[in-house]
Length: 195
Image 1 (cartoon, helix red, strand yellow):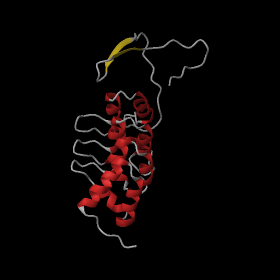
Image 2 (cartoon, rainbow, N blue to C red):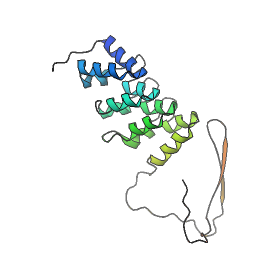
Image 3 (cartoon, one colour):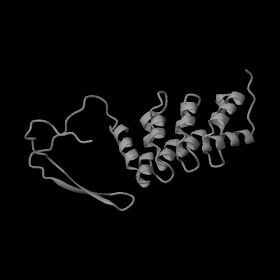
Image 4 (cartoon, rainbow, N blue to C red):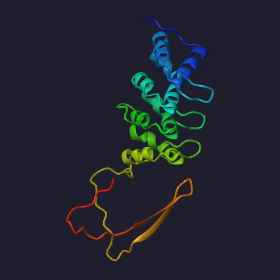
């Protein structure tokens, strides 16, 4: 099959098709121009086909596109420095966020650490949007290691260490208080597990 090269109007059309989730038009674009042409499609501010489907929650279009686009497109940034994952987070699309992070040959959880020009990661955008479900999922899957590999060591407080009261303020000014410090052994003999 011989494929032709898309002109700027064709690229604009596929971006719009992704924005509106028009899977049939996206498929026709790929049939006519091949999957490689998807990676070069950008709007005036650098949004890719993945930005458009992710920001608008079009999982069917995302399922079609993910195997066709290069893994590097998942980390592609628009003019504001945001990735498709940022857009999924801003618009509270959990299944889209999961698919972007879980693409087998993609950047994976490293996508969660990318900061946009506003200095926010997708987790930060989820928090700004008040999207607790997404923020919780990001925290559950993100890489919280300090970069050291090897055996995990259990941290134990020194004897005589007192509890520390911590207050954390989120972007909306809400304050959460917590106490950090040694915990007494459980009387039941089982360790408590938090979600």
